[in-house]
Image (tube, rainbow, N blue to C red; front, side, top):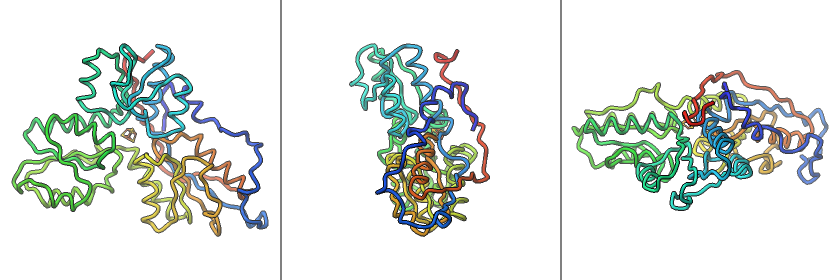
Length: 347
Ligand code: SF4
């Protein structure tokens, strides 16, 4: 993916955390086998890791700190990755869950997941200076939701309850939003067959994820509108398609990402659905050597909020465990998506 022109500012999120000379702990070494037998192939998914929305969100916080000094208050984790959050904390970002925790007059950033209108209003009522890091693809879903509501349609959101993006979208629509996650949820909707309805989807669900639910909605309602499939998040779809390709050649799938990252969890689930042992790990320290027993080809990917430095950390840890690894990259889509920074942070 083409990184934004300020991508260098995320360099600290890419540099290896350990020196390459760090000896692996003996306890973490694989059971003794001849070096030639220990060679493991690591195949990297293409694409993997940071999407354009995450690059933009991280850049926004870093540029805001450079331009306005610390602290900068960020409502919710800017993206769902502890390593990213910790790196920004060290630079002077302060993460809070509620606007009420932000001192008067403090520079405020809304996270990439988006926020509800009530959050926007609360910040406005306190005259907080706000920079919105909502991913443009999430903002587009907000616009679609408002558009369908303005048409007088009952709005249905396909997504997972409790996810901050879902809460933000539900609070942006300006009307009641019915949330569904499965076709069983569709069966339970309290709407007549001839009611005018529309659906929008959480961005971390791909076309493949939503196909069954959308089919159920179309079977249930006569007058239904929804976004074109080209409107879905390219990054979610591309990372999921890449893992499906990896599953054809790998006998173990490792997904680098945080436990609270929806898209990272989904990548692991795809591996499991394909019958491949699949694990979600934050970094190399969570790698269990027992997973490697009898494995020859490891498929390695990362969620959209996981920086490449953590992928390198996993490779280094694998090298420390088995002593010899062959690393290659799968053929796949080259992404060239770039989202502009908000006007107030551009040069
Ligand atoms: Fe935006 Fe898609 Fe990345 Fe979410 S996964 S931040 S919607 S580009």
